[in-house]
Length: 240
View 1: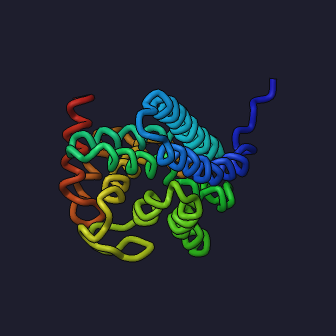
View 2: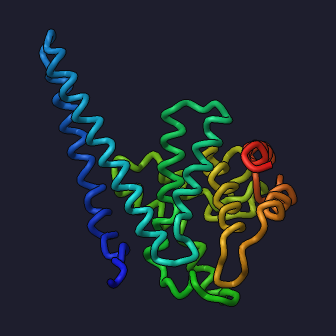
């Protein structure tokens, strides 16, 4: 039996996410208009909204899975990165809403890749200057796509800046230090780590201990030192 091509659902899923904003507004309006003493009605609407939220998150996860499925080298990448980001948020004692936002950003951080020829991502050798410039544009593409979906505007800034470097040499805006959003600094570390320990068309997977050393070596240049230290403490507790 031919394997189902998940990528064919990407346009439909994007449109569905855009439609969720209107549905969310309907629930908000219904809650505002409940008359005093109608607690059973309020609970019914709140339960319906919780179900709606679950469908919304499930749709986002399905979309991320479809994007990852475009290449065998990225299968499962977004879900792993989301898991790391969630653990980081808890370790840093962030508020639950902020953790949720960071997790959404992690799940959808590669959405802009759908606009780039897959041959570039799967190229076994080095990229040409033109190809590299194309790849550098994907955080902006991702952020623009997310900003067009009202319910996801809060995550677009994190996604836009997750390729910034702590010393200001990254892209797209050459932000430096703590001017880079916290969510982007977290995403930068865990995204790079998962990429290193995964197989790529131009190299074999890197041993996690070697990848940890690479994170340490790039503290203060590519990565926020405090974020690297926090991630390493989590990793060593899990696997050390």
